[in-house]
Image (cartoon, rainbow over all chains, first blue to last red):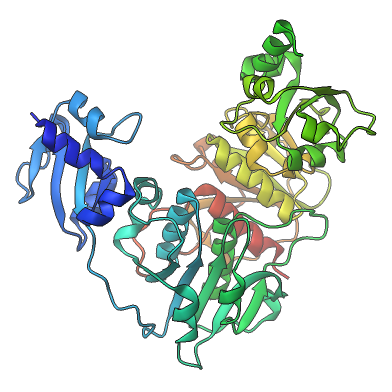
Length: 246
Length: 246
């Protein structure tokens, strides 16, 4: 049985302030927790109902058996799915752009669902690093973690002053920005490496970040559409697909 | 001031059963309602707060001024945005595939957010018709309407027995289906016209619908990814972009 103080310390992680202080976050659900177990993340504790714990009994993990009611208490989900894990923040990987591959840069993506979907898209297209502006949603917000469907275990996500980070890149690095007044991306020579910058849901890429962009691109819209823009995650997926197109 | 019976009849439209009976649905927010006003839809009534109504006073519309509190009562949003409209279902357009263009077919897309995003994608890529299986989410669910950002005013959406509809198509119509065991879409000859079938979030395209597919395609995943699939709206956007690629 969980003590009051255990419950309190887990529930504290529902809030960004305590996650950052404790450097821990919450993951929920059997499938995604299996991905974390197979990953390099350090799992601090796993709270599972019997149905889950009996399947994982031989694992060298800190597993605590809880009742369905206890799981409901510590969970953020309406219908908790068997198990909740407390996981340590990963160590900061180098912020350097040195892998000579594609990298995503997010300029203030605010919606957790969009951020989670973008992390999932990055993973699908083998983009291993995402650099976020400090105003971007917290990747360890449980809504983001769940929306990644486990992709967050394979993609490095770092927060920094994005405009400054881009400005400090070597001069020969291509910085692509998706902008409404950009060039048709199908008529642009897209290199195999570089940074792809995507902007805020409502305001796009900030003026300061735009200064560091070397190639402004856009997805052309089909003639009849009156749409001003696509959802940012959808736009990111179309751009990434084009960069990775064989 | 709204009467109790007015409030009751508007709130009934929060539920699918009453929407289908009354053949009316709800739209909320100044921006999207402007799109409906400019569209062919018949607007039955508009309930706006003074800030909105005074800007629209000269319009020949059935506008009812309400207080912020009344708007809150009839709204589905946590923070209502100035105005709510009751709109009539559009007339059923022909279910025939005759426009010799691209058409989307949805096999049981269940999440309202995904359906709304797919309608928005169709609009962006100039795909004017979507045929849905009867088990697909209700396009007039307010969550779907809002997620389309107005695109629903420009795309025809019809519900039918999808397997049967596909089977009855002329034999020379290309029916593309996105399947995990499909051929790499970048190595497939994608015609300028045909049907693109996308399947359910969890189960993909049903066995019965698969029988009518003439070309099984997939989006190849990048080498390192362990992801089983992309979100269905994201996958739809990548496929549509490839079909419309210049």
